[in-house]
Length: 255
Image (tube, rainbow, N blue to C red; front, side, top):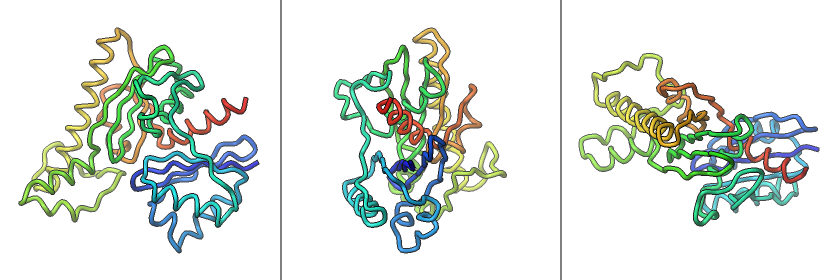
């Protein structure tokens, strides 16, 4: 049995497979490339799935494209996985559980595969989300702009900073990055990076103080590799956390 799991973000798609109970993370690709004409490499890497599961924060058009894509290539109907009120040992902290982002729910489920609780889950993507888990309950969380969103907003709202649109954006980080910048581009890149890291560190500190415990921290998302070295505590960096959460839920329900 070959099961394919897809995580549809705002700009990228990540995928993983479970073949005969063996999990393998496939990678990530832009939405355009995943659905585009030159996607033979991706299709070859995925192989022939027997079942397809997906979760999405993308719009309906992307979801429709995915359904068409799956039906065309494998003659399967993909199964959508979404946030629940109570599932697999986790209770949602939202007053309206269906309003919680599906990616946040899956990421928390993935984190529970590493730690029981207390646990803080940070997903650094287009939006930066922080969620906390204690005693099997989601305590709630925060949503703020991610790094790229911050930089784009600064460029849009500040007339003299339009050049930021031409930045080559990399999630791998810059080996030559220093604390203080000597040009405008670097000042924006470094400033937004440190501002985001400071926000994360303060939330972690305040939660530890409020609850009177030490939260484990799990970090994921497209910008996570740039942020992980700036977090003041030990961090478990899991790029495919959402996908692992999906697999955990599928296995939990199956069993």
